[in-house]
Length: 228
Image 1: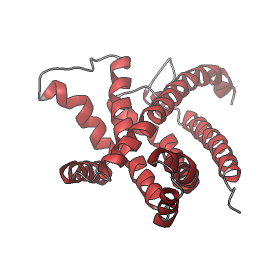
Image 2: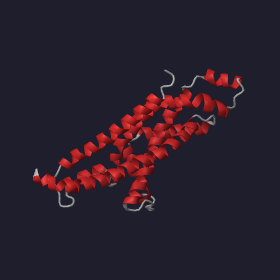
Image 3: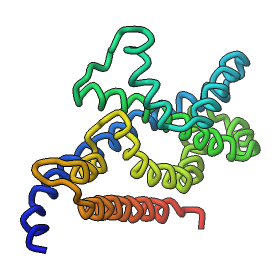
Image 4: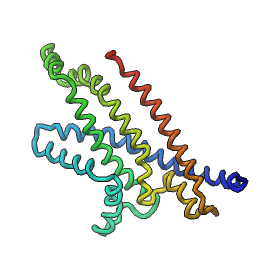
């Protein structure tokens, strides 16, 4: 017990650094995937058949393959196959590769949520808007938008909670996120080795993060219950 008390400040410092990397990846993924997902959704709903088919095939491939494989391919493919290691070997390069993989992966998932939300608005409401002399932009902003937001918040919330945990997959390319930091004390780091107890602290970080996100997203869902 005394040994753990001596090691605790070292472990917490390392976990805090790893958590900041996890939080950074989480925020960057959301900021990139949410708008990109909307673009992909419009592409999949396009009346231009080649574009819609191409977009849906890409979404199918991304959603049908593990994110871990996508991470490995995006990080290693340029260097091993194209002989052009665009990411470099440093922590910043690994983070950039992880961010690209996460953004594209989650954008494809978000695109299906957006598409479902947009297509859930009854056609009759859109036709009524035209009868009232509204433009397409006015119909989207005044008729569709609020209904779409309310429809997509629950499934988006689930994906966001999943993203919190999925950030741990970035350790496959040696990104020093929080699980990488906790696991390092099992292998040997900063004079500590064979210690599994830091992994329990790692779980606490995830539980706290998920708890906060669940409360925030739950509050947002309640705010959007304007049809009840």
